[in-house]
Image (cartoon, chains in turn orange, green):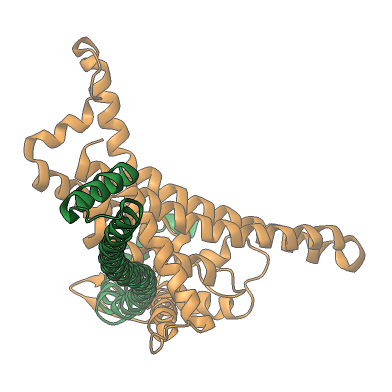
Length: 257
Length: 164
């Protein structure tokens, strides 16, 4: 495995050929081993860092001196801020304010993870289930902990819909429990699958365009342009969906329905 | 699929935690407060301007109100002054008329007194003349001395008959 890491890296820089799944391959940039665990800095890590730098810079330097009449960059930063602030207020409530910095960071990180992945030759770390599931699972655990700390044993009333007849409990409680436990799975798979399928589709259609040549490739090329636009929409939308669902789960934990 | 290759799971999760943690720290300490400050300053400025405008409008309204009050007070004062002046004039006129009427009445009564005195005097003169004349007539007709007191009584009764 260690042997072909280098060749994968070299191949990736060479364009990746026609394998539609090649774009998802991870190759190390800096080998780091700690206690037998491979925590090498990879292309995935690199694009995480780039997404973090871009999203932080946009907000930090976009905010600028905080003019009364915003500049263009300031307007972008402020629009993103108010979009997420409104989302948190509408979906979590006023007690969600203290979670706003995390929700906002999450949104910006995913947004740029998705959007920067649209750059040809870049790497989309949100198309990896390991990343999305780790993120969704940590959010799930933290939100569940918040709910338990806030409500104690009353938190488990979340698994029985308020006002349902008690006789339905043996059916409803397992259903609610499964639905609750599947939240991190659906949250992570939704993002990962959307990003992976979209990028794979783009690559497949692009391969068609190359294979069919200058004349025959025009139709796939037109389709490719359309789907690329759609992918930008999906990239933004999926970041938004992931964030809004986090808000809704947080609302459930704070207010129990 | 490279997504299900567990080789890079640990590395991906490790770097996700590091990057997201650092980004969270940077965002919450250095980026979000700036945007928040700018938004709050703007909202405050707008609210302040609105408040100031409302206050100015209120001031203008109260000023207009006090102005209207001043005008209506001045009008009332003018009306009162006019009324007082009219009353004064009327009083002066009345008193002048009254004193004039009194004077006229006094003069009239004085004149009447004078007239009556003159009349009495004239009457007494007439009586004396009438008595003298009657005495003389009676003496000339009778060629005798007539008692003057009888003549006087006769003339008086004649005058009394004429004047009453």
